[in-house]
Image 1: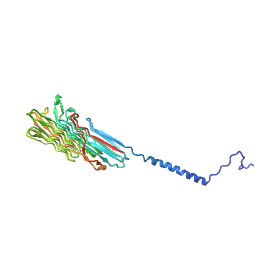
Image 2 (image 1 turned 135 degrees about the vertical axis):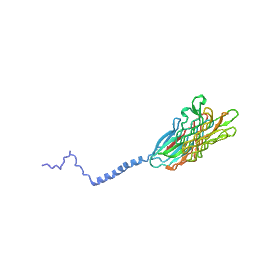
Image 3 (image 1 turned 30 degrees about the vertical axis):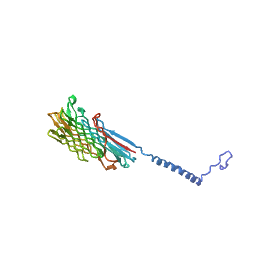
Image 4 (image 1 turned 90 degrees about the vertical axis):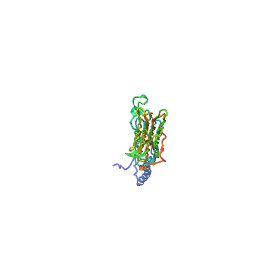
Length: 342
């Protein structure tokens, strides 16, 4: 009987048994390979967070509104907020407030709502703008209106409307509010009786009162008062022995109304107060119906706000945006909000 443990020359040699030393050596060489594979995801996690910038700006159709999510990975968040300017008439509307600053990241997503306020309507805007408040965070005040402006057969804007405020919010809580400027007034004069209209008050660190309108002989149409922090501005007060109408005070964040004088077709009209954290007062009017001469006062500026929630800080003093209306652009410059993160 043949012994199966013997082999012919052409047969393959017997397989060698794998020793314990071989197993240990192989395992030792495998360890660095496994460690390198684990390290790769850690390296990819160190890629920098992608930054971004968003902006919203108001138009005559409506305020600018935008919801934005700041990602948890952001390490730097900055903003610029500009309130809407007041509309112009015989004078210039007031500038909106300008605020720049930063928000402290939390390490979690931050949901922000941006609202850019509309600029106030300027003189000659037609019926669709009459008694329609500029919208934003705090509405602009109404300016006085006139009937049959330039033979239109309809009502039109005569005194400038106040600009609306702009803001950044978390939920319903405002972090930053930039006030709107007051609208300017209109005046009407006849031969021998000079009249001058008051300009709108600027928003800013200390919102200004609207300028006073004057009529020869000592009559004066006081401008609306600027708002102070959370306190609305008082309406302008008219003085002198004429038909006088005082402006209305701001209410909450809404600007007060500038008043109409005269018989509707003829007259002078006050400017509306700016909106914001608190609204500015509307301008008053004085009117001499016998001589068809009178003047209106400008609207006061709306107030602003920088809170402390979310680590918000302003980069400097609250300024003015230099977005006032002009003869070439009777509507006030629109509000605008920009947020940038990296």
